Amino acid sequence: MLLHLDKSKSETIFDQIVNQIRNLIDSGDLAPGFLMPSTRQLASSLGVNRSTVVRAYEELWSLGYFESTPGSYTKVRKRKSIKHINSEKSERDDFWSNHFIGDNNLFIENLNSYRKNTKTDVDVISFQRLEPDPRLINKKIIASCFRDALNDTEQNIFGYCHSMGFKPLREAIASHMRLHSVNVEADNVLITNGSQNSLELIFQSLVGKEDSIAVETPTYSMLIPLVKYYGCKVYEIPMHSDGLDLKVLKKITSQTKLKLLITTPTFQNPTGITMSQAKREELINICEDNNILIIEDSIEEELKYFGKVHLPVKSIDTNGIVIYLGTFSKILAPGLRLGWIIADVECINRLTALKTIFDLSTSTFSQLLMYKYCKSGQYELHIRKCMRAFRKRMKVALKSLKMYIPKDRASWDEPLGGFLIWIKLNIKPDVNIEEHFLKYRVKVIDGKNFFFSAPKDRYIRLSIAKSNEAEIEEGIKRLGRALESIE
Image 1: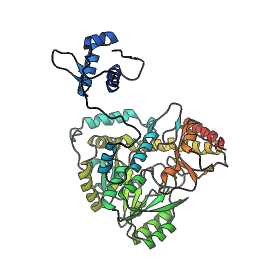
Image 2: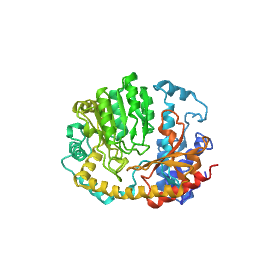
Image 3: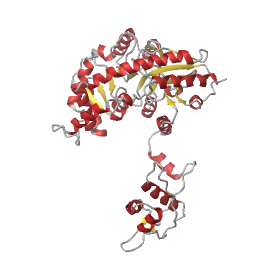
Image 4: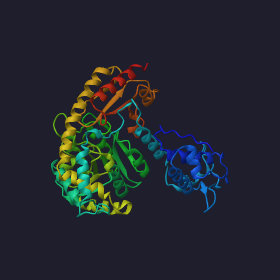
C-alpha cells in the first residue's frame, strides 16, 4: 500500500495518513477484508514515527473503517454502502424536506451566501464584512482580563449563568447606556448571544403569522430570512437622506394595524444614514398613537465622526414602547457573541423566560471576561481608540471615492459615522456585480441582498470595518478600475 506524504503541506502527517486510507477504502481500492500492514511496517515504509500510525489506525477504527481483534491483523471493515451524492434530489433529501417546517431553501441560500462572504483570498481587499478590525484590539489587555476571569473566586466561569445574564455586566451596560441618556437599571437589561439572537427572541415572543410589521428598505440582510421564516406580513418603508419616510409609515398605519417597526436610526445598515432628531421625535409620536413597538437596533451608534451627536430613540421613550438592541460585536469582537436587550421590566422578564427555554443562558465565561474589560475602563478607552482610527479611515475612504470613482458611474452620500458607505451604480442591469469586482481583486456586496423586493437601481455596500487606510485607498482604486471597465 503506497501513501504519498508531503511534509510541506499545512495538513498534518496524521491527517494525511487517515484521509488517504479513507479515500482508498471509499473508492473501493481497499476492499473489505483487506489485511492492513502492521503499524511498525507502515511507519517504517513511510519514514514516520510509529505512534503516528498507531493513532491513525485508532482513528480509522473509531470511524468504522477498520476492525481488529487481539493477536490478529487489522482488516478493512465491511461497511454499509453509501450512495454517492449528486446534484439530483435524493430520497434522503425528501426525508429531511418532509420533516422540516416551512421553506428552508431561502435559509440555505442565505447561509451559502454568508459562507461565501467569510472566505478570504490572498491579495483581495474585502469591503464585505461588517466586522471590526481585530488589529485594533489590545490583546495584552484582553489576556489580562482573561486571567482575571479565570481566577475569579466568586463566580464559577465553568458553570451556568442566570438566564438574564451576569448581573455585574448588566449593571455595567446600564451604566454605559446612561451616558447615552437612556435611564435604565440592570433589571431592564437582558444579555443575549448577539443582535441576531436578540431579534430572534423578539420574533419568537411577539410576532405571529397574522401580524404585520414595518421595516426599512433597504435593511439588514439577515433580517430578511428571519422575517420570512416567521411568515408575518411585511411593509417596506423607503429610506431618505434623513431617515425612513414617515409619510409612508403614516399611510400604512391608516390602513393596517402594525405590531412593530424595526429601525436602525443611527448609521443604518446598509445605507449609513442617520435619522434626524426631528424625525426621531415624530417617529415615537406616530408609534405611541398607533400602539406600535419600536425595535431600535444600534449596531454602530458609538462611532460618530462628523456633526452633532444623535441620542437613541430609546432616550425619549417615556411610555416604554422602544426595545433597544445593543452589541459588543461591532465595536470589539463578534466572536464574543455578546449583545443585549433593553426594555420595560415586564418585557425583559418574558424574554428571559423564553431564553431559558431555548438556550438556558449566554456564555458565563464571555460575560465575565467582558465585565472585567468594562470594569477596568478599557471598553470606553477602546471606543475612543476606534473613534480616532475609523474617523481617519472614513476620511480616506470618502477622499478616495472622489479621486478614483468615475462620476458618471456612481454616486453616494457621506455618512456621519459608522463603517458603511452605500453607493448607487450607473451600470448595465445584467452585470454580476460581485463577480465583476472580484476580477479586480476587491470584494463588495451586491445591494440587492438588502431588499425584500427587488430594487430598480443597482447598489453596492462598502464596509471599511476590517481595512486600514492603505487597504481602503488601494481597494477603492480597484473599484474605480472595475467600474471604468464596464461598457
